[in-house]
Length: 343
Image (cartoon, rainbow, N blue to C red; front, side, top):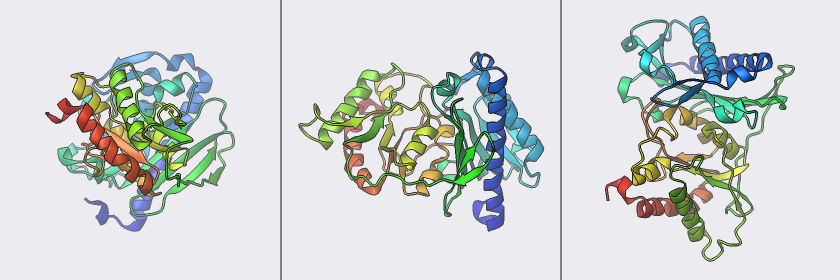
């Protein structure tokens, strides 16, 4: 089965299914949080992909129950999701994975730490590709959706979805009334970085010094001699989906996650990187002109559809920003992370 084999109506149905899944998860999280916030904070288990908190287990259960109840049996699908790695392939309906037609990669809650402490919205992310077994790449994804999981003081959650090659569908959801309204999505048209938000991800102490060196050198090369006076602001949003949303909405101009090269340079073996399930919604950005690419090759973000591979990426609000930043960032990575390239 391939994406091109689906009719226009079937592709649209698949988009709506992902949105329905995320609507259900949003409702579940709102109900669970209203019942008990403390019960969602504990560590449930540690997997090869990430630390799994109780809030993650709640979302995992909701997703599997939704697929069991609602996914069309004529479209057998494999589910790729953190927390399932050691349990073998999960399929809906329950068939041998070799007979599935599609592969769905999910991040039930991207931004767990922020939403656990009611600091900032998390997002639920999903992308679907034709089933190609171990050969599946992120570039195979042809339907994607993301839905906001808001903090307790928010009345609104945003939802974005797309079938590749078609216009983005964007709505805001009033979580108090379930009313929906069209959402305007417009990336930045700025041609420079000053007086806006641009960020290199460095969420934790691992590799902090080298990350800072890379960022400082990048700003120096973009604005030589002006490092002390530059007004380029950094926003460490601990959610790849959330970062993508901020660039799509024009609030951030440039964000890059170069942790795989930094950790390789330092000889750090760690799972504390972006993974394929975090960036599987890249088609949403492309639909509105945001560029999401591999900062070294300049091509599409590369990686298998699994839960453990380290993924690096760069997001640019427009082509002008990409042309300004990308060559400099690539050169700096080669210079400051030579071991990552076998030099």
